[in-house]
Length: 155
Image (cartoon, one colour):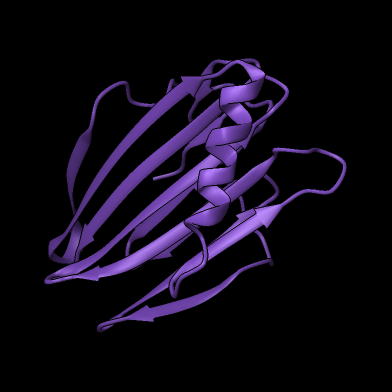
C-alpha cells in the first residue's frame, strides 16, 4: 500500500517512493525497514509498503476512517490517519511533545534545518503477532500535523 500527503491540504494516494535514507529495526521475528523521506516516511515489512509523503501527485484521497485488509500469505494490515490543524503557538507545543517522545529504542526523528517545526517522527514496537508503528509529520507552513498508526500481523 502506498500513501502520500499533498501539501495543499488535500490527502492523496500516490505511487511507491523509494529512498536510501533509513534503516532496519528488528523487533521480535519481524524486520521492519523505516525510512525518512524528507518530512515523510516509508515502512516496509513483508508484503506491506507504506509511504506517507508530501508529494504533488494526483490520486485517491487518504482514508478518512481506519482500514484493515488481509494480505497474501496470511498477513493483516491496519492503518489509521488523523490530520490536525493548529495555530502557531499550539503547533510549536505539539512539535515539542513529538521531539520529547522520540528518545527511545525503535524511534527515529528527522528535523529539517531552515524549516523550524518541520519534523517527522517514526516509532515502532513489537506486538504478540507482529508490529505496530506510528508516525507524526509536522508541516509548519500549513500548521498541520499528520499522525498515522499502523499495525501488521505476520503469519
